[in-house]
Length: 286
DNA sequence: ATCCAGGCATGCA
DNA sequence: TGCATGCCTGGA
Image (spheres, rainbow, N blue to C red):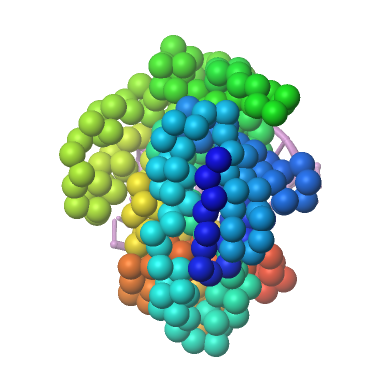
């Protein structure tokens, strides 16, 4: 058992429901969450607004793993101050208070975001759950059955056709390709962030947005500012006078506005925008 | 019933 | 470099 204390607020519901991660679930309205982390199942109990209690079926190295996962080294208050650049961002920061970025397993996270393209959160969750159930190892923890996320070797012989049968559509090809070629870039030494970004994009099925998500959510590179349709709507409306600009320019704009904390800014904006859809009617663009 | 989602690759100006 | 189009599926 590990206890994590956060000087700032930690909000488990915002953190696990904001859409950054897909395989953690709560059966009690957010009091506790269960999910697979690497080789084990962890249970997260929110003791108070600052404290998480973590337990697991496997305690070796648990403290190190959860400290990495919950990014306990981030200076959250500095981050909030830093991206609080105007009245709008003040509202966004306030609305998202307690939402923390997580540092996910890179194999699972990459697959999650490859499957996310032109999809939606319920469907992504279902796709990942199916993968776990079909190919992941079963673990019983506190009398419930959970599934670890399948390893590369669990998936290496699964065909594109079998992924299509799971309803992955055209993403099946990308997924098959990713699994086949995974170690080609994994084995590389750590490179310059933008060079690694390009390497990720050299994998068929991974473009700018997915590459940014992988770096942000799985490689701890929190200066990345992935631009999806929500980010596009928000940034054009509030930071470009409603005039359309390319996603590439929006990515640069995010980076210049929010600097090294751009990843947090992105997740906060995403969370805010998705929960205020009336501001961003998809028919009013262009 | 259309339309369009948390994109990507491709082909064409 | 920028824009249009097809791609699978499934919810609204």
